[in-house]
Image (cartoon, rainbow, N blue to C red; front, side, top):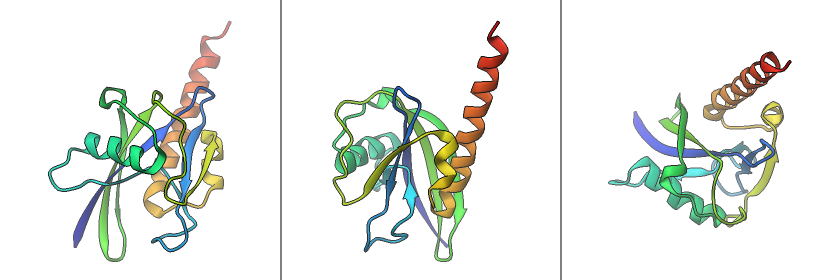
Length: 144
C-alpha cells in the first residue's frame, strides 16, 4: 500500500482558537474541515514542507524555529496510508487568507468536533481537546 506523507499545523491565535480549513469542492474529501498543511515533496523536510504550504495556502510566513511538534496521525484509507505530523504554531507573519478556495474558521478546542473532518484528523482533534482540558485543570489547581 502506498504511504502518503503530509504535514499539518494547528495555528493557535492569542485567544487560544485553532484555525481549520474546509476542503473546497472538487478536491478529495470536499467539505471536510482539516488543519492547514499539505504533502511533503521528495527531498523536503517536514518543516520545509509546512512553511511552504502555509505560504501557498494562507499567505502567512512562519519560521521553522516557531514550529512545535505536537503529535502525529497514522491512518489507513482504502487506497493509501497517511502519515501526518502535527505542529502547533503560535507565531507567524501576515493574516491567514483562503488562497485555495477553502473556508477558514477559528475554533476553540472544545468546538473542534463540531466540524466534520477526515478520519485521520479525528485523533488529532481528540489530542487537542484533551490537552486543552488538562491545561485548564492545571490552571484551576494552581489558582488560590
